Image (cartoon, rainbow, N blue to C red; front, side, top):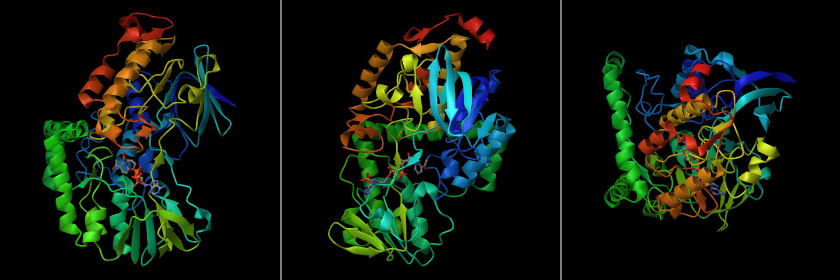
Length: 492
Ligand code: N01
């Protein structure tokens, strides 16, 4: 059933979708709808409720610059407070009335300057602009271990935590040691009778020295907003001038991360066998550098086994390793990450002439500055291909994408915009060339890669990202009704 005609249909009501909605309203555009499959806003921060879930980018930076929150309880806030921040943001800015919950988008088709967006619930939404704001870490991945179905106890993915299962006094197996696992393992270790952690490859983890903010600090952030801005700037600088150079291969800063990591392991893990297993054998920065004050303490506990022999099969009551050991488990947690490629895999997107996005991206996703791709007019992506980062806040980068989209929309007015194939191809050659020199390219596999190409991450610093996104080169696009900037703004 056709549900109406909009200027924009946005898919997803996480930080990306809601941030764009806010900017649209500020620009006087109210004619949009957000389709959300869940029953509330927040995206990843609604779904990931595992114990210990928090953000490993400091909250003052992992929040909108246009909606600062002086009330963060911790430097790295916990999931409930992040969810409550985004929920309040939606409420205070009257964004909820634009969201239609319980709508899972299954296809989007372009024809003659318009998109038809169809949902699994049988509804169709017509629009001029189709915007994907579904994020990169959306579809939980559970490896197809032999015998997986035979396990008789509770088992679930970290992003689908079953809170009805009490882990107190249980034998628990956690598979995976990535960012999610590093946060949940310390919490599970505290209450489980025994925890076995299945590690395929260790991570570079350093201390973050988190602590609650004092009442005085919160008062300062509220009363002196410029101090809060300065503080946010300082956090941004840490990522830009310390972590980003490590990803580029800076020797001294890389050595510092390795040194800090070694000190942490030594301080908290007494068993030499465990210590040896925790040392990564790949370049620092090739996978996300993790921040934790509690991970190595948890691994060092007597009730925690670090298993690195590889999983052979899952039995009805435990896990068998490739060396034949059997660990008995009451509960298994899959902290095994997400399907990050191909992008938009759940949505059948058809562009000009019925071209399939899946076909267009058969060798891996790409997009001009991560936002547009040729042959798919009036389609924008937020947090699309090659926009992720390993060193700063995604929200900082999303804000640049909002500006990019608003500028292209203004120029497009009632017509269409499409990136030129040659401009996109040249951009991708530049991006892949630069990416090939970074730490991310120096390992065979990670969620940043699809085959040999790094498809998820941006190739430069965040200042460059902001500058390029916020100053579109209009010659790189075809507009069906090119008009002057002034006229375009007036028409919007
Ligand atoms: O997923 P991951 P994640 N057999 O892909 C292992 C963001 N995030 O959910 O490394 C055995 O990092 C896999 O092993 P290996 C953040 O951007 C942010 O933890 O491939 N093991 C790895 O250990 C992060 O980068 C926050 O050898 C298998 C683990 O599972 C991203 O989400 C918090 C396996 C997967 O780790 C993803 O993190 C949490 C197999 N067959 C997450 N398959 C914030 O704080 C996979 N593994 C913002």
